[in-house]
Image 1: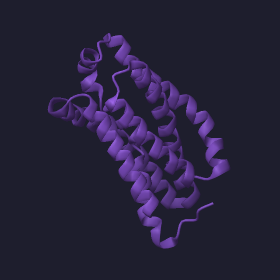
Image 2: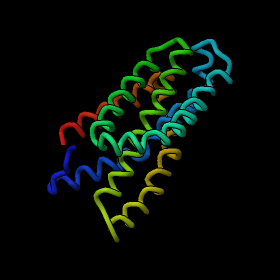
Image 3: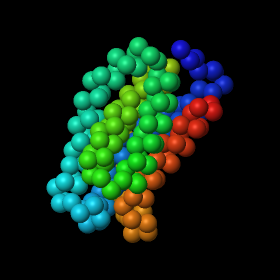
Image 4: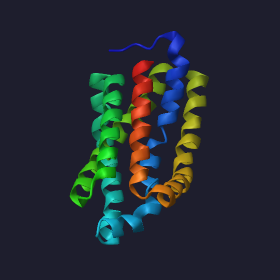
Length: 185
C-alpha cells in the first residue's frame, strides 16, 4: 500500500479536488455534440442519447462495487489504473464510428469514473479529520457542481471548432495528463 509523504499532501489534495468533477465532465461535455454525432454516425438521436444512459447506469452501479475494491486494493493503484483506462476509452470513442463500441466504452468510462471519484472522496476521509475534513467535504459540492455548468460550454466550443470527437479527445488527454501527474507525485 502506498503511503503519502507529508511533503506531498498538498499536491495530492489538489489532484483529488481536481478529479472530483470528472463525472460531470464525462457526462456533459459532449451534450452539444449529440445532434452532430447522430448525423455523423448515421444513428437516431435516441441511439446517441443512450450513451448518456449507459454512462449514468454503469457509474451508479459501479459505485456499489468500487468501495470494496478500493478498500481491498488501496486507493492509489485502482485510481491510477482507472485514469489510464478512462483515457484509453475516451480515445477509442473519439476515433470510433461503431455505435456498439461507443456504447461499450461509455460503460467502461462509467466504471472508471466511479473508481476515480470514490477513491478521491475516500482519500479525504483517510487523510483528514475534524475541521479540515469539514472544510474539504464542504468543497466537494461546490467543485462537483462546476462541471455540469462548465462542461457544455466547453463541449460547445469543441463541437463548433473541431467536431464531436474532439470532446472525447479532450477527455482522453485530461485523463492521461492526470495519470502522468499522479504517477509522478
